[in-house]
Length: 127
Image (tube, rainbow, N blue to C red; front, side, top):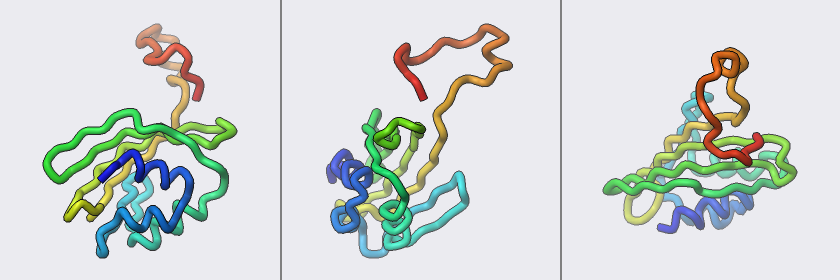
């Protein structure tokens, strides 16, 4: 399975294409909000979310039947920014389950800035 292609259709909110990647009894867990979705519920949550989206897969790891991605996701107007870490369990080259962890991107907290510790990972990064 081409995980980059999957993410392309997620960002385009293309429900017909997204559906083709899933095993017939697949599911998705969003751990940060304690939600469990059937494939159809996940597609509805993704495709009905407002706005036009963009992003890029920054990292991919494959371990046996597990694909792990870290993806930067943001609205096309760049009004916000997120990173999502996704664990795709595969069966017969289809997604059997996904465990996802979403985070809002932002500046380091003021208390750490005042300590003078840490450096920016990317100099041109602007969440």
